[in-house]
Length: 151
Image (cartoon, rainbow, N blue to C red):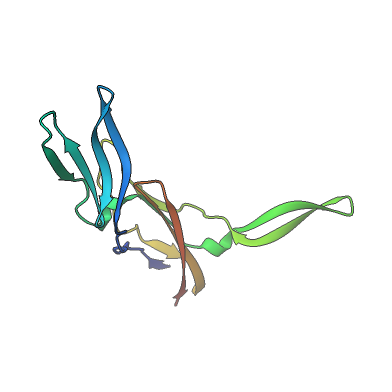
């Protein structure tokens, strides 16, 4: 058996300031969560007008909520059924279905995240497509496919 594992490396941070959430108390905004210079920051204002800032992220890993790996992405082609001349015909779309073969995600009770997948064993040498799906703390879904050669 041949095996491989996937490791997540740091993506670039977004820049600029963007409000992503607001906390409301007594009908007024008491705090905002903003993205500022690549960090998620909670900005609060107390009754005396004192403004405090609390970093909610300290590194790129804090942005990831979930990630998963499909070690053989091209093994499951997407097919659709179409009607041609009154008959149902299955056709490939040219896309593939992501099969979650390994995953790591955060929960409210456990905020840790594994950054290296479990090893995966390939039965045969050859060319494979490995798909990695990452969902960030805002719910954005990104998938990248990498071509590998197993010898």
